Image (cartoon, rainbow, N blue to C red; front, side):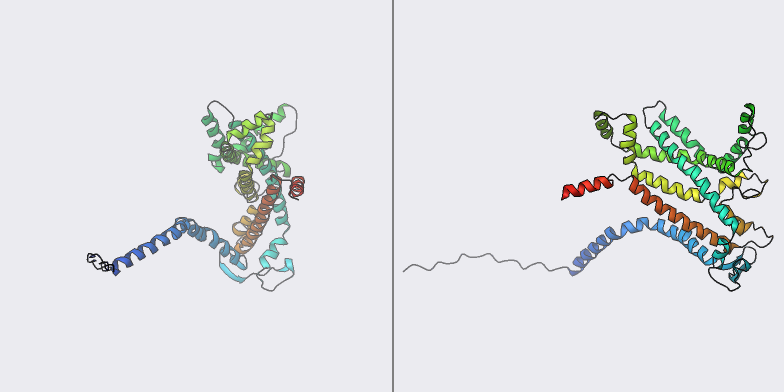
Length: 358
């Protein structure tokens, strides 16, 4: 018979340490705070912008919408719900009365026409010139910083100073341009009386002030394009113009969309240039409203009404809301059109891709 093995003596085990419940609770609380900080800190960092936007952006917009429903005299205050009056054949109070009154004003449609005309004469050439200047400044030029500061200098000039400068250039009597064309035997141009001439003059002031700003934005986007893309285009035999239209402009698509939308918003809200172009001699917008814009129209209604003592802020707010809707529509249309035009895949290419996929 075999002997039964004897189990070796095991050393006595020490009891497990007592758990510190308070310490574990602290660890759990610290972990929760850490997770909350990771999730909430980004929103806290951007919250000042949204708070300021609510205070100076959204609240004035909504408050203006409420004023647009009221008969709000700038001097005496709120006069109740607005009434359109005889021009609309309505004497009943309505929240749409001020909007109806504005839409029945012939002067408003003249102002809208002038706004679109000045917008077309300023925004389109402005973006084209900004693209050309950005391409020139992106080349290997000497004294690059000097030329870039020179392009931005008109943007720094105050609107009043720019208006004084161009009032001498586009003056009807003794202006620089009329003097020059008088030397060659042409009749002087009535810059303030003629509708198209006044629009060209105002658009020139706008282009002078804002072309440099858009140029630097586009220049920054051009410099962010990888250089190896241009090197590959050169290897493929592309010249400067081919590189510009086939490489540079498609790579600038996001920046171009931004510039076009901001220029559209600013062009449709133009106020400073036509007001300062008046020179205080022919009334705001001209004696025949030849360069009256929508912004000037609503300013006249709210603070400089043709009827003394009865400026109506409610009608001005209604015109402002109509302009806001027009700006939003144009901005959306610009975004959609620029997305389609600048899209890398056209209709034919999409058909080819579908055929290849099949």
